[in-house]
Image 1 (cartoon, rainbow, N blue to C red):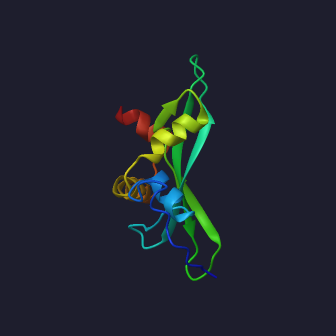
Image 2 (cartoon, helix red, strand yellow):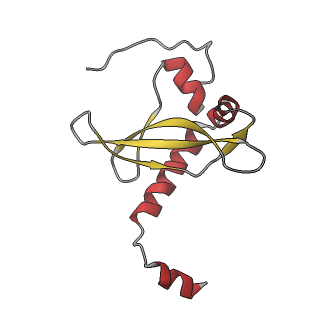
Length: 125
């Protein structure tokens, strides 16, 4: 069951992905353009490149209709980079919630697009 916790508005900017989490102690949530509920989180990984950078990306967890069970997810490519995973996550955490919602809707649109065999795609390029 849900719980109400008052936000700590000194913890960050609640209009950003990272700030929302800091203020409310939970990830931000959106209704996607497909009508499903999604929550968003930031993941940081070591990027396999010669510079040894770390990258961060958004993962959107889709929740089942009428039940609290995850029913899928969508994720972006690496969006932010830094010298550590924490630095990359902090950079991406500054993303405005409106931009995260727009990113979610773009991922939903791409996932809904009919897929074509790789050889048809290669023929077009």
